[in-house]
Image 1 (cartoon, rainbow, N blue to C red):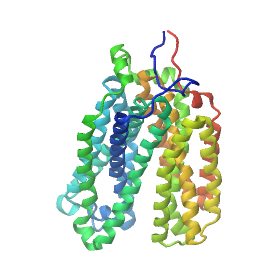
Image 2: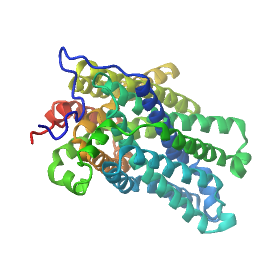
Image 3: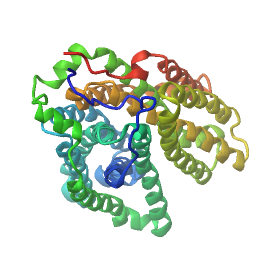
Amino acid sequence: MTTLDHALPAAPAAGVPHRSLNREDYKTLGLSALGGTLEFYDFVVFVFFANVIGSLFFPAAMPDWLRQLQTLGIFAAGYLARPIGGILIAHFGDILGRKKMFTLSVFLMALPTLIIGLLPTYESWGIAAPILLLLMRVMQGAAIGGEMPGAWVFVAEHAPAKRYGFAIGSLTSGITGGIFLGSIIGVWLNSTYSSAEIHDWAWRIPFLLGGVFGLVSVYLRKFLHETPIFQELQARKQADRELPIKTILREHRQACVVVALMTWVLSTAIVVVILFTPSYLQKVFHIVPAMALKANAVATVTLTIGCVFWGWLSDRIGTRGAMVLGWGGMTLTTYLFYLNLPGTEASLVCTYATVGFFVGSISLLPVVGVRAFPPEVRFTGLSFSYNMAYAVFGGLTPMLVSVWQQVDVLAPAHYVAAMGVLGVAMGFWPLACKGWQAKKA
C-alpha cells in the first residue's frame, strides 16, 4: 500500500492509456495562466515607471542618485519578501488547500497594486507616502512568492500524465507573459501621453488597470476546483500532520538542493538575458533604446513560446532529453548572441529571439520541482526551495554581472552559459529526472 496512489504522473507507462486535456483542464489552465500573467504584470510594472515614482514619492531636493537608489530599494523589498510570503502561503496550501491559497495570492497582489495607483505623493503626505509605497511592495512580494509555486502545483495536480509538461509549460508562459504585458503598457502609455501628463497623473493608469483586472481574476478563480490529489489527502487525513517545513528540512533536503540549483539557472536566464541585457546593449554597445527594447520584446515573445515548447517536449522525449537540449541550446545561443553584438538591426533581433526561445527551457524547473516532493508537503517544499534560492541568486546576479563586466565585456555571456552547463548537468541527477516516488508503507 502506498502513501498516495497517484502522487503525480511520472511518465505514461508503455501500453497504458492516458487521457488528454479535456474542457475542464483547459478552463483550469486558462484561468491559472491568466491570473499568473496579471499577477506578474502587477509585480514588474513598478520597474517600468521607477523614475516617475522616484520623483513623486521622495523629496524634490534629494539628489537624483539617492532618489533612484531608494526607489530601487523599494522595488527590491518585493524580492526580499518573497521567501516569507511563499513559505507562509505554501504552509497553509499544504494544510487548508491549494485553491484557497491560490486565490489569496492573487488578492494579495491585486489590492496593493490598486492602492499604489491611488496613493498620495510625497508632496501631499510627506514621509508617509514612501512608507506606504514600501508596505505595498512588501505585500506584492509576499504574494508573488506564493503565486508561482502555487500555480505550478495547482495545475500539475490537475493535469493528465500525458500532458503534464505541456500544462506546466503553458502556465509558465502565461506567467512570463506578464513581463511582456508590462512592457507593452509602458510603450502605449509613453506614446499616448506626454511626459508631463505621465508625471502628473497617467503613471497611475497601469497600477489601476492591474489592480482591477487582478480583482476580476480573484473572482474568476472561484470557479476552479480543488486538486484531486489534495482532496484525497484530506480524505486520508494526511494534510494536517506536523508542520510541512519541518518535514521538508528533515526528509527532503536533496529535493530542495535540486530545485535551488535549477532556480539558479532560471533566475540567471531571466535576470541577465531578459531584464539586464537591454541596458547592457545601450551602455556597452550604444544601441539606441528603441532598438534595444524592440529586440527585447521579441525575445520575450519567443521566451513565452519556448516555455510551452520545452514543457511539451518533456512529455515526448522525457525530462532529461529536454533539459540537455534546452539548456545546452541556451549555452550555445548565448554566445551566438553576445559575440555578434552590436551587429545589424536584423541580426540583433534574430539572435536575441533565438536565445530567448532557449531561455524558455526555464519551464523545466517546475516540471522537475513539483515531482520532487511528495504531495503532503509539495507546495511548501517547492515554494521554500524556489523562493529562498531566487532571493539569493536573483538578488546577487545583477551585482555580480555588473562587477565582472568591468574586466570582461562578455561577462553576461559567460555567466548565462555556465548556468546552461549546470542545467544540462542537472539533467543527469536521478532525482531531477525521476522525481518523488511513493514509498511503501
